Image 1 (spheres, rainbow, N blue to C red):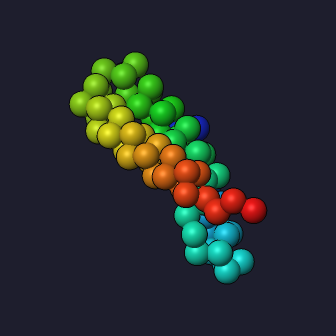
Image 2: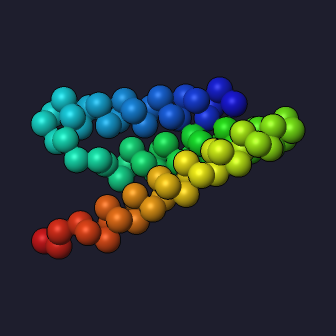
Length: 78
């Protein structure tokens, strides 16, 4: 469980670094690391019997992946 929380915190730190450097766009790396962290939390909850919490985390995983796909699909081509 701590690994999941650690990855979520790392994801926010990654996003913060981009913002401090002047890039206010949501970063795909942020979303990817965040999703991995939430997947670990959800797996831990399923193992621990907290399926209701894991279901809520599944909703955030799906929403995050939708945002990630939208970001990648609308990325300007160079």
